[in-house]
Length: 154
Image (cartoon, rainbow, N blue to C red):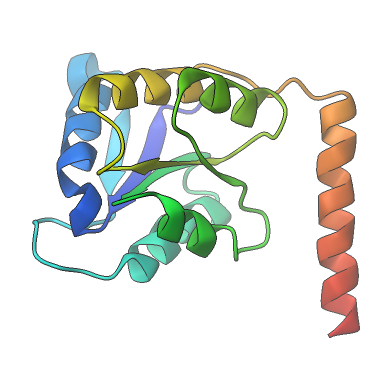
């Protein structure tokens, strides 16, 4: 896996983002681009989600991490982009299977929902689990076919 990641949060996820960044950079394990926000001042999550997703869609990063208060807003926003598979994860199991079966390329976390220790473990599972392929690839292709047919109808 590429060791470059892009991460972003709104004010509700700022503290958790900072903890995750430190964890990932520790020991030079990852190079992390922080797409904002840079303080606890109230902010809107959609511009940050678009910035992180844009880095992935341009091919600059293979995976990203988004954090807001609950993770729901970031997840909804990120998944509006074709080619993004953002997974809101609350435990090891969902993080693992978001990668194994769904090839998620964006991990979404709730900064007001998860403790730092669990969040760091979820990040590690997400980053260290590879896509299984096989029947799961076929299912992702079905999603992509639907997206394409929907686009052609518009």
